[in-house]
Image (cartoon, rainbow, N blue to C red):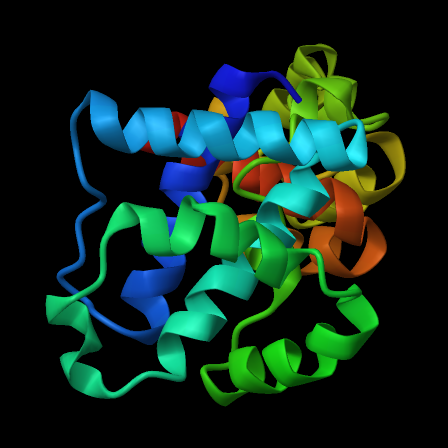
Length: 204
């Protein structure tokens, strides 16, 4: 992962984690100083680990927000970017994950959250082996021909990769709710990256 990706990914994941678990109105500090702190953190992690992946970014942010959650509620008045992206934050993260993970995961579970939710925010779906099937436009002819037809629901299930939010035909089809559930059951990973790519596009 490049430094720019790390900086943007950390701001996105860290902000979402804090909003989901601590402070709903949290806004990540703006300005060059905040980015320099995150960038310096990246440089030091690269020196220690050799590389930084989407998984490590996610684990790092979870580690830091979990640490914030252990303080009294007035900690918010004292928190600053260096607390979560400075040298002590790196030391905290370098504790073997097996010693941290069960506590962090138990904490996430209290909010019905998971690591995978935040990992999906920084995964590069363009490199995912199923990415070419997020929106297979060549299936539109078949979908259009059988749109909203009871028989079409069966045909789509055998002749296409079924529901995708990128398909204008799927969005119009009356079978879409049922087909979406079927797609999630039959192709869970494809369904996941389709939904994630769609949400990302809508938020851009």
